[in-house]
Every structure is written in C-alpha cells, then in structure tokens.
Amino acid sequence: MLRSLAIAIAALVVAAPARAAIVDHPLSFTIDSTEFAGVLIHDKAKPADRAMLLVPNWMGINEANLTKAREIAGKGYTVYVVDMYGKDVRPADSDEAGKASGAVKGDMVAMRSRINTALETLLGQDQVPVQRKHTGAIGFCFGGTVVLELARSGAQLPAVVSFHGGLGTEGAASADTLKARVLVLHGADDPLVPPAEVAAFEAEMRAAKADWQLVSFGNAVHSFTDPGANWKGTAEYNPVVARRAFAMMEDFFGETLGGER
Image 1 (cartoon, helix red, strand yellow):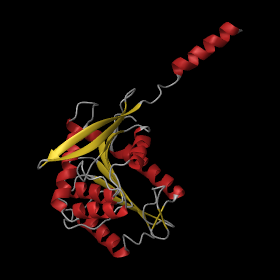
Image 2 (cartoon, rainbow, N blue to C red):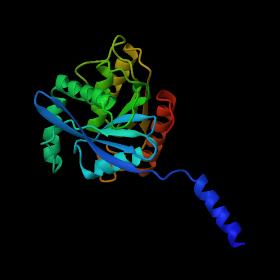
Image 3 (spheres, rainbow, N blue to C red):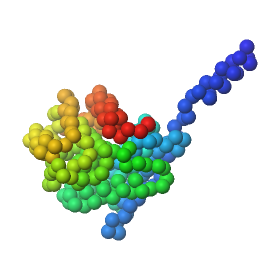
Image 4 (cartoon, one colour):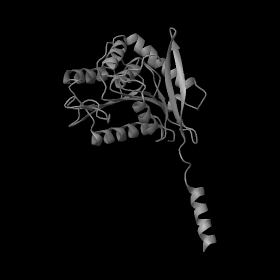
C-alpha cells in the first residue's frame, strides 16, 4: 500500500505544472541624457509568449504598482513596467504625482517619445524572448492616457488597453497612422473623464476607422481597479468592476496577441 501511495504521489508531482518563478530585472532606456528606470517582470521557470508594456497610474513605479504587475505576470505575461518620469522622480504623494504626470501630459511629443522608446527597449532586450506580434500595452489612469498616445502615434503593436484613463489628446489618431486595436475600460460615472471627452474619443476612433471598443461600467468612477483608491464619488475601488475589466483584457489579448500564456 505504501509503495502504491508513493507511486501515486510521484505521478502527481510529475503531472503538476511547474510553479511560477516571477522575477524582477531592471530595464532602462535613456533619452537626452535622462535615464528612465523601468522593471522587467517575468516567469523565469516558463517565459510567456505574450508580453506587455504596463504604464502605472500617476504614482509611477512604486511597490503597489509593481505588485499589480507581478500578479499580471503570474497569469502568463512578460511585463515591462515603464518609467515615464525618469529614475530620479518617484512621487511620494498625490501632489508630487500630479506635478510629475502633468508635466508629461503637457508635452505630447515627449510622452510619445518615451513610450515608443520603452516599446523598442522591451522588444530589444535579451533577458527574455519577446515578439512584437505577441506584445500589447496596458495603462492605468495616467498610464491609460499614455498607452492611447502610443497607439495614436502609429506604434506597430497589436493592441492597447486603457483602464480608467483620460481620453483627450492634442494629436488625434488617423486612419493612416493608427495600427493597434484599442480597448478602453471606463467608469460610466467617472467625473474626471466627462461625457464630452468620451464623445470626442468615440468620434476620433470612428474618423480613424479604428478597431476599437469602449466599455462603460455602471456604478464605477475613476481608479476602479486600484484597491487604494478611496476618494468617494471621484476615485474609488470597485472589486466587481475590476474583475470584469481584467477578464475583458484577457479576452481581448487572447484574440489580438495570440501565443500561449
């Protein structure tokens, strides 16, 4: 009996999938002598086919946003957490975050340069294999705005997803430049992204003949995926909506990125 039990346990061990070994590596790029210090996160035991740029919310690279990125990496992605501010800018509070994100949003050319350089940095690194056809981009709040500008800039990648990001732009997409498919996950009651901005985005996508979707979640405001958001009526975590939004991201990337997770 003991011998049979030992054989059964051994068979289960062999059949069980390898445990994920999520690791972090620094991955930087430099523009005009400023270093942008991002973090590459992947499963060392079994590198994923799918990869993504992840642009955090306005707090930039901090432990909460890295934790979120590691959770996503554990679901079958190589994740490059992008530094949009420069290695010496790490906001400590919302005031500092507002100044840092405002400076980037106020310079569309710099924003697009940074996020496009980040994309090429991810594709060009040699720590883990990444293919353009299996690479997308996601962003949260400020980061959602950034990945939409990546798409508008004409970047060659299959798809981008914005979670509760701003939708306005100074450089509207055109049919000649927009290559990526676009999914916007939006809180229907978000006071920071008013209906006029949503309508303008929809008109922009139609004019660009884009492959796009905009999902408005009822009973959701800004930052609905952020467990730390507690600004009542303006920026609040909604776990039900967050779960639905991430499921939609998974479906969208399953269709657009291909590969195995």
